[in-house]
Length: 415
Image 1 (cartoon, rainbow, N blue to C red):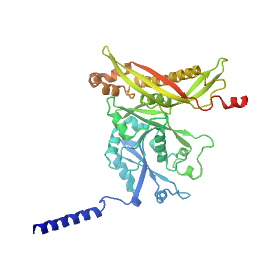
Image 2: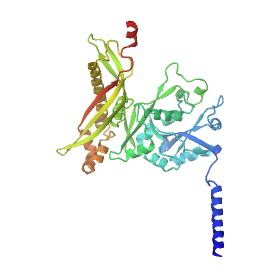
Image 3: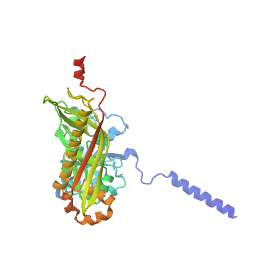
């Protein structure tokens, strides 16, 4: 009798599990009923509200997967609405849109400059709490508004947000800017210095012959936006989630060195010959490493910045420059060291004297190497940081001069 009862109970359990497995997700939504959001933009709205802009894959173009949109169809739709909060703005957009807005595949989050200066902690908190947000979205700061960035076309990519995502991925291989996602931005903002940064994007006029025309030029509300292109290179600096300023392209290069992101950096080196003529040679950093080390002496803290890198010559050398001469290569290497040192100095000067923000990592390095000393300096760090001394010692070795050791034009004349 006991065996029969146990068997009956087992059957009931198996039936219950089968029903649970075949019932599917209770809150699932069919893909055809979703509107995939690729780009999110936030600007400061009127009367303290937030202006939310979404770049959505056009349902007509996404219906066939990778199928190209039909003539006259735009691959993306840009929607915008204002609300008292992020959720309020989303609700207003959803009210007039037939498909459910789906954020799990968002690639970029763009903050307008005014909102970034006002503070983005509330917006980041709202984003991070949403279960569809993964924290892997790139954070970008617009020099003007996020709306115009999401309205701007990206060359060679029909989905602009996807094009920007590809650019961020490429920036990890070449030293143009430092791509940062939501997770890393929040992590840096919680570090001892409470400072972080993100790529700054600007809109610049396209050169003659690069103007977008036809259907492309009619796709956005503001036609002037279509005739501009997105440009990266500068960096936006944050402290306590507030934009405190920006740094130039060369200062961004110095920041990348401090962050141990040397690979891909390109340096143009001026060369001068005995006769007084001048030229320029191009080199690229192929590998390297930098390190920031705190040094304590007589109750004073100092930071030693050291680095080593290997470079290769990429451009054609000027006529008269002998790359087979070790002395010439040593001179060029010394000039590269000087140029990179100047970039790092410019970055540190901006951090200490202009922005009063330790986004270069001094406090974080000290906290990791000597937590006890950091706790002693922490209360007055904001006052001490502008006067903290440092030294820079970079060593460059030219490891590759290329297959052609003389200018092609000179070889032709020699033949």
